Amino acid sequence: MHELEPHEVTQVMGKGGALDAFKKAKDQGMIDFIGLTSHHPAVMVELLKTGEFDTVMFPFNVIEREPEPELIPLAQSQDIGTIVMKPLAGGVIRSVEKCFKFLNGYPVDLILNGVANLAELNENLRYAESADPLTPEELKGFEQEVAPLGKDFCRRCSYCMPCPSDILIPIMIQLPWEMVKGCSYEGMSEQKKEMWRKLTVWWQACEECGRCEEKCPYNLPVIKRKNELLEIFSKE
Ligand code: SF4
Ligand code: SF4
Image: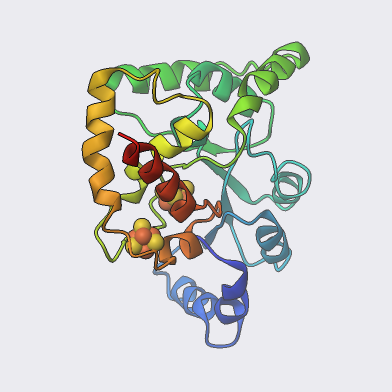
């Protein structure tokens, strides 16, 4: 059951809901296990306590630490498989080694990290196979390193899509964020400015319907970022 939202819990867990259907499929031998995923640790904790789930998948990295105090220990105590998504925080953390070492400090079972080529796969395997966690000093340094990133950046998960105006939001929201975080327009190469100037035209198709913001699990202010970007380029 992927990406459960708090308002869906009653419907999914209630009589005749999705859980009943999955249990029936399990009884019939069509599936072996029932897994749960969400961006809401409190929801996952509540649902794991029902004893109905075999695995749980959640975002977890040095920036997103919410599963640390309750969810991970609960899953471990109930022998529920743990699957980590966004181990590199959607790609904003560049050091694969530090991310794997961070996760090696926790009893998680599976790390889902995307790869683009064989070299990246080998790099992932190298760090996944070394069981060394971060030392307390390394963890402190890592936390200080990522602190300027904050938490309000796009993870490129695409839950905000589709957009009725066909805007590729995960791409389009990236530059406003970079600029909000101090990547100045003046400091950009001419090539990059030109690329964003062209892409910004796409934002003009936004009708501000707000659907993307309702669906974004990180509550990113898409419309505000869009307006910031349009303002920057309107001064050109
Ligand atoms: S607010 Fe704009 S970008 Fe978001 S879904 Fe609506 S039209 Fe698309
Ligand atoms: S705007 Fe939100 S929902 Fe869309 S890709 Fe980024 S993080 Fe995911």
